[in-house]
Figure 1 (cartoon, rainbow, N blue to C red):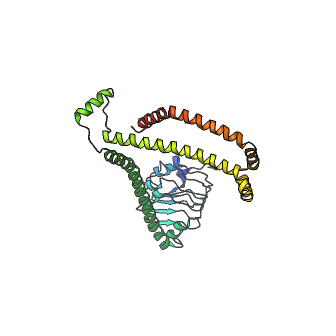
Figure 2: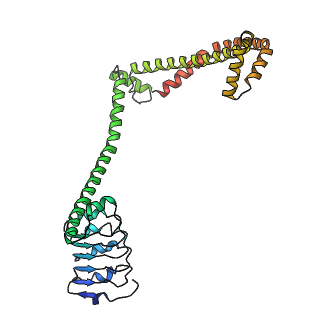
Figure 3: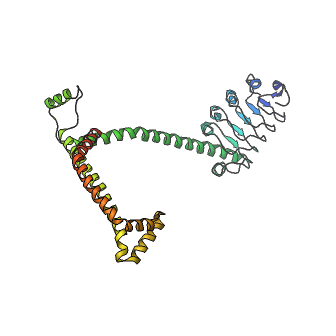
Length: 316
């Protein structure tokens, strides 16, 4: 407060008139002991905010906060359930707390000359007379109550969705697991397998294991075939670049220029180098293929076996 005032001296009958007192904050501590006051007039001051503790003034029925500089009112205003008359005329309030919808006894509300949002302003109406203010109180309380209910329902729905996600995932896993169980293992067989696995029961079926191994072998063969095909295609393309100029120089130049533009590499230089040293290249390629063939034949079975074991471990 800018000026210290004797709050008790401002009481007249049931009205505590603190208007025009140059207040910058509400003197809640001084007002609280005055139980006789049911009407609190704080209009025409310099209030920029109202403390949440104002709800402790349970005896207040009429509250006048008009012509201040308030930008909002307390979020817990709904706890003042005995409030019947609320004047917020000529402030800087743009939004209203949802708890205002809990003021079921509110019969009069003035929101005129506030920068309200379009939705709230439409519900509040003009508040140009007593009848409008009565309608404003009824409409705003109903509107905010419905908004709060919608928000609560949406929260419940989202919680249900979040809680349902793990259940759906678990159901999906069970469905997948059941689909893989084509042949059930007998209790005796399962006990033997469990003993071989250091006491850990084997839940995957024999049929599922065979299917997994077969799938791994096919995948490995496809992978190796793809690598070999890529290597052979690369060699074939290099040979085309080397021999094509002898048969169709124009087409060769077009291909080389396009490759240089796409790869930003000196393809023309590599081509000329290949033409000059093609005999040497063929000789080295022949030696390379013979050595690769011997090495591949030597290690092929070992590589396939190693990859099969790793894939089987992964898919267990």
